[in-house]
Image (cartoon, rainbow, N blue to C red; front, side, top):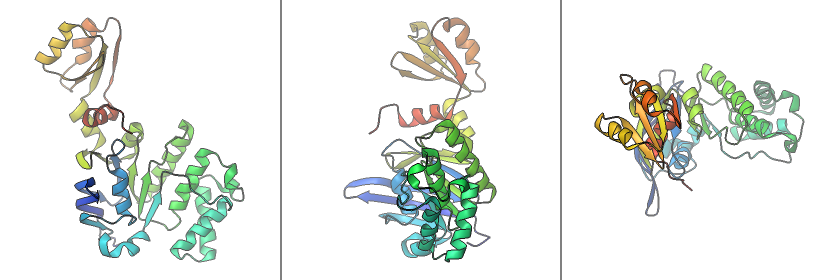
Length: 307
């Protein structure tokens, strides 16, 4: 990768169709060098289809996609050598030990055996798995397996790391361990493309976010800016809101959503909704809290269950 290259990924009008169904619909975005870009959306939004095009697994239907300044349509073999992919599934070879899994994977990148052993041992130490290097895969916990898959994605010293829901199903301790490893990777200058369903994870790790749905990008920007713009600063949730309060939010006007028997009111920086709403209408069932990225996500993509 050229040291002067600033855009690790540049997509313009990127499109992916399956017959008459368009999974990714003319999206454009960039991933900067050393940046962590979060890609958020409900199931079926087009995230996985986008990721598969980014590492050359699935051909584009339309648009252009450049990675490391190279054209994915013609240079995908060269691009793959600079990308590490941590997929959703834990799929190590169960017949090999922890160390052997990394050594065998290194052969796909033409890494010599001696160098592969050295890289594998270093990565296992980095992931706090060096004490399990000769153990069978079946003996690892879920958190250890995720750390192993992340280690495997780094065996080729990638400039771009694609993390597809890397912490799904992990307990809080394991999630935080992986977060610490991701922070360390970013400090090395590795660019990260992250998909996740955990909004706290996205807000903590990502420099910028893209939220997409139905194959289109809805918004993109810094997490704090998106929260301020689409959810404000403070949130009040009122259960079984009286008619007087409903009239107040309509005439004030205040950003709000009605979800079943809940009225959710979003207050901007200039509006002290805790004082405006709380003292008069929060005498019984009421929640007062800070606005979060989850509020933004639900306001933009809806609250219905996706399969």
